Length: 254
Ligand SMILES: NC(=O)C1=CN([C@@H]2O[C@H](COP(=O)(O)OP(=O)(O)OC[C@H]3O[C@@H](n4cnc5c(N)ncnc54)[C@H](OP(=O)(O)O)[C@@H]3O)[C@@H](O)[C@H]2O)C=CC1
Ligand SMILES: O=C(O)C1=N[C@H](C(=O)O)C[C@H](O)C1
Image (cartoon, rainbow, N blue to C red):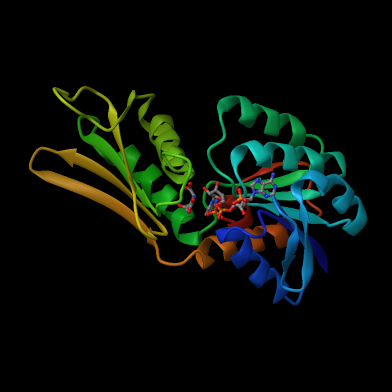
């Protein structure tokens, strides 16, 4: 039975994750952490400022973090100092924050870190990789993502992962974020961000040649797809060797 703490417990993702963990026969939801204290699913939610004391009290096996980048870095450090395994879904990390996370995790605790925990998106990334290898080099590439009006970071973590896959397969390209005025196309990848309403998460990669367009798309209809993946990762990561793992490791896709 793994003891689980959810960071960002009272947020959109935290609430869905808490519900799934509380109903999992092999998991014990022992608490949450959020900016303000409270409770969810019958367990306490500690205020972020007293997270360390709370972890020392409830002693979880794994922390699932869906907060914001600045908070997640500190949460990861707090988990690492106590030898607690991690699942991190938070997005929007700067290169410096990514380096801080690597230093906190590697050689200390096992952590599954992914910008998207849905099975569909992990397959989508594999299909994009394959397409990027096969599509002729002169085809233009545009990446579009759409999310709800409350999303803070842009472009999404999932879109950033897509851009990293495209760079790995086709060589580094300049990223042009939207266009305005006279904007002739070069050898860039165009990146387009849409924010509105309650869109859960849409991503499209367009490969545009002369007289044809190939598009690969993924659309999430419910946050449960991300939450189920994160809870699955939490069950998987406890007891693994220290290091950073991807959702491919959890799903056995590599
Ligand atoms: N990898 C994936 O599959 C997915 C990743 N995400 C990512 O997860 C993150 C959260 O998304 P979402 O749930 O929609 O966002 P929300 O804003 O709804 O939830 C984040 C929660 O974290 C709280 N929080 C802020 N700082 C701290 C802290 N120091 N300690 C604990 N809690 C804190 C926020 O409180 P307050 O509101 O008071 O600031 C809020 O309740 C985002 O980065 C998003 O991109 C989202 C979906 C899927
Ligand atoms: O903030 C969200 O909602 C989501 N964030 C993740 C991202 O930035 O890619 C994953 C998903 O698209 C939903």
